[in-house]
Length: 320
Ligand SMILES: Nc1nc2c(c(=O)[nH]1)N[C@H]1C(S)=C(S)[C@@H](COP(=O)(O)O)O[C@H]1N2
Ligand SMILES: [Mo]
Image 1 (tube, rainbow, N blue to C red):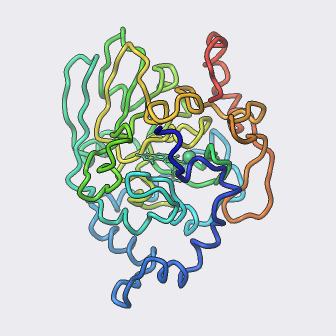
Image 2 (image 1 turned 135 degrees about the vertical axis):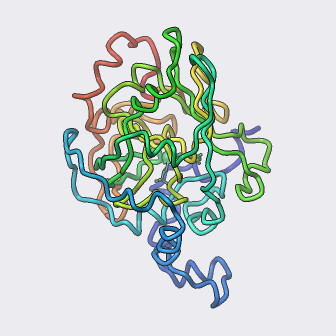
């Protein structure tokens, strides 16, 4: 029954409403029925946030180009006004609703198979890590893609702070529960909170990143402030936003998408152009802002860094 509900993710992006719709500000304002008093542009809203955000001074961070600097960069306005964040709604234009999310104070709870469970505030966490900027390719399972500069720190730095037991096999991350502003969380047919995870060797891989910034500024709320996962060799849905819980376990976690539709979305979710989604091809992708589709790359172009992780996992469904 769940799987028969028609939602945005059930159709490939190419068949969904064209994103130009979301970029026409007048159309957007009209569609949202906003009055003149609330005609703020994304840029203005973000400038206000920056003033209020105690971490604003940490950005921009020094760029690390070790994993390449793919081009062309996606326009900031596109990456920050075309989003998937189902807690706020099932269409791509949730950026404005997401501004209601308060990201201070923000506490991350660390537990499960660790030496000692603890909680840490986001600004204390930011003080303990070395921020850097990485320009990564990003590929949504719906076949749209982007190239954006994330700021943040390696997942490995977070793992080291958490001190998991040697017997832990997976790292599980969950999004905030706050139905008062994350209105879709009132719909109990979804397996909230949004849950994702990595195997420990994936979490320790150089490429696995926690993003806390975007385009040289603190992460916009719609992109998952104040911290979200960024594993660029996997489909976009792995990259859980607005994390409040990090747990270590020896059992493979059941993720949000597996809970919704396990025949189509699995745990590993590595990008592979040769393995089609049950309802559409993954061979090509449409960069945000472009009319032309381009070929999708194995592991989203990051095979040299991550293919080795899967050498002994060939029996698993690595590409869904
Ligand atoms: N909590 C949460 N995290 C999430 C999602 C979501 O709906 N909720 N959507 C995922 C999907 S499907 C994609 S493609 C990316 C989109 O990230 P972006 O909006 O920053 O481009 O976030 C991922 N992380
Ligand atoms: Mo996605």
